[in-house]
Length: 193
Image 1: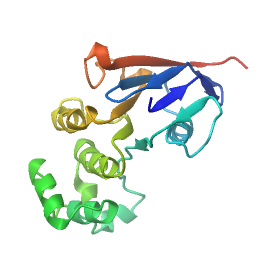
Image 2: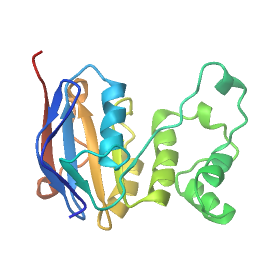
Image 3: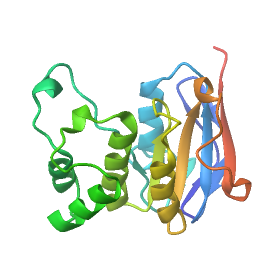
Image 4: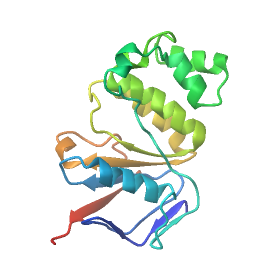
């Protein structure tokens, strides 16, 4: 067992009991609108940074955080895809170049000029360099171009696990994967005050 939750609260939300074992794909259905404070707290609980007696973590879960432009500073940033992965991972320069080539990304491109899906690929590489177990939200992704992201996750799923945070506002499409034997839905409910 990688993670075992007896159910827990964050603010007004209750997360029903669930467990995660190797190879599992867990979906946590979050009500809309997006609440980044709740999501950040959820990351901290699931990766063991914020200990809750109701949640036992035996392995590290790493959130996939897409690099975003911070105000106008990003407009003047010189941070390239190559530099980002060299800074955020322990991959060699050759390994990074091979990974970027497999995604058809120019190593010299400014990461803030990339679309959300391309930045997600970079963030996946960073997270998978730290753990085989990841947490990711699909909010803001372009669902027409998810194949590379799915392929990258599928490659690692046999060795680890995936927790997808899915918001109600994203429910007009399917989850990342349609493999019911590996999908456990975890629902959150806003509690009345």
